[in-house]
Length: 276
Image (spheres, helix red, strand yellow):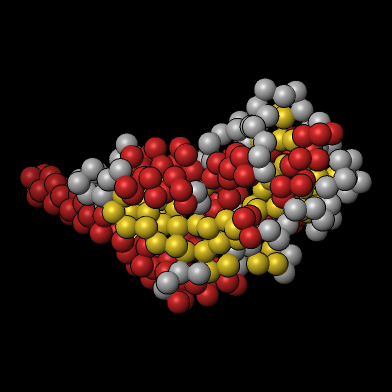
């Protein structure tokens, strides 16, 4: 009788182990490196359950600057990327680190600052605004973190014909994410550049009445394109290329593009879908 009980316990234990192994074997996880804006805005929290329900794949992500995200991809520390620095992405692909690059959505960059606008840049072009900020030595908060936003900001100084003022006292590099940099900008009564989606998120935390306002917007050069990049199996053989490609296809699908289009805060669109 005792032997029968032992055998029954062993059988139950083996059944549990087999069942656990079976469940684990069926679990599919996809690890993504992405920019802070897709995380801070809540877009990924919104999309991830739809992705899992429709594909059976659990999406996990780490949010950082695009420069660091691309490095994570280069080092094979993740399976897929969702980033927003086209020139850096193209270099990533050309250097053999990426396999596929697909445009998914966009928004735009804006310059925000105090409503009283101490430097007087409201309504100016981005080039004129940067010249005025430099001339009046108004505080400008740069993320300084090699993010997609930081890369774009440095490009804009260059296009305006201004050497990057990274040694100037009025030019402050926060080394932090976008929302943290916006809060520092508020404290210093200065200016910063942000993507519109993150600004709307910031507005929503202030019940729609944020102390920092959009002062410069609308220039075509301020376009902010987001793309999904899969990793080249030749460089990262252990990366889950098949799952990454499914994620890329899913993001570009009409149903997901509609989800992105309908994702709003304060009744405003944070991202505009443009997959082809």
